[in-house]
Image 1 (cartoon, rainbow, N blue to C red):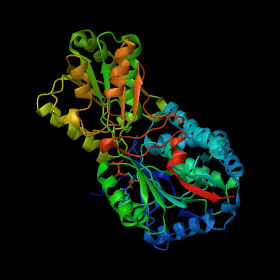
Image 2 (cartoon, rainbow, N blue to C red):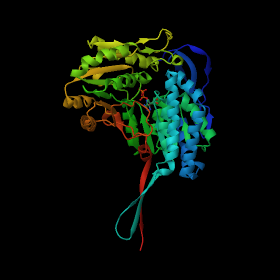
Image 3 (cartoon, helix red, strand yellow):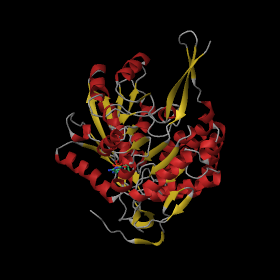
Image 4 (cartoon, rainbow, N blue to C red):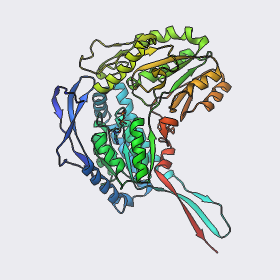
Length: 491
Ligand code: ADP
């Protein structure tokens, strides 16, 4: 389905594909219109790269990795470049935040925080680049054995549209820190900040071929990158449906992959929870980025004895929420596209038709343009355990509140989805918090807190349908490198 949107007065032209530190025009000249979700107008275009551009990008990365200027840099020098890029992102933060806000529809304050997080990725991995030590392994007499971490080669990265600026940092910074040369396929729905950040990478001094970017559609540029025999590893963040394709392509090429595929993350509230602390966090964890966050706190599991005390207070907060224009710093912005809006609304309509009670609903701000893709936040509950809202990832501002009886039931309910990305446990009982945290199947568990997004230092990834492998923190450096065992015989 192709929807036509009106064009803004000025439409930024497509830059092309970024290969060997330069924008190169597409032979086909094909472009993709970029719609501002808050306004419903086309305000930019990006190149629709395909197999030919991906092949050129992979070749450039290969040359950089094998003998190019990039391959000759020491870990310290790579780290310096990354840190400098982080600094340049901060120096250009206001321009980047405005671009991110328009491209994604995020409130300006969120866009600013995202740009700062993007800079933090480059700073963190800039500092870490020369701190990845090898190990010495005790072995038989007469042998000296070490394990050394080395780059994988050319790494492919396919990222989604929900946090474009953060995602380029999360994807590329650790891979570059380890000395890989990279090819990035950003999302067609929102990728203007990554396209600007790679320009800053030239200013920072990155040699040609270390960073290459091919914008385009998933089934064209994305598929071509994941299937390309010249890549040594692929990292993907997106839907489980496409995750299967990425993993299948990786299998064909006998390469590894890291997949982050979303979640249906629970926040578990026991009757002794500190509600003053929990309430704003519960709301923030589903409203952040209009619910379009893999780690959104999308299920609220409430102990039965707490339900009547909690719900009126939560309802009051939800009813006050407003979805509006990024420039007005509303509680939340619009959904990324007309297609995604329709998908979120279908979940809401279905739940209503199935008789799931609505506890409270926010509203669209009066100033929000009619043509924008706004969905007021809504909290449903009690949601029956087998209902779609209890199981499926909505990727919108829809909170499913559910009831549990006791600790055993809470753990069972928390684990009763196909996903396992993040979980939150709210209780004043430390022993209970630890027992539950250990039994919940998730890559990250928070106690009396919840961290949707952010947390560059914290290893992040899923179990079950949420994917496998870990990004962020030092773990990402291990993910984007391989251990070489070196065995030396001596007298
Ligand atoms: P979302 O639901 O977040 O849009 P997708 O998995 O569709 O999730 O998209 C995430 C990223 O994967 C985007 O960059 C998109 O272009 C890309 N993508 C989509 N389809 C494919 C595909 N068949 N092969 C490779 N990448 C794809």
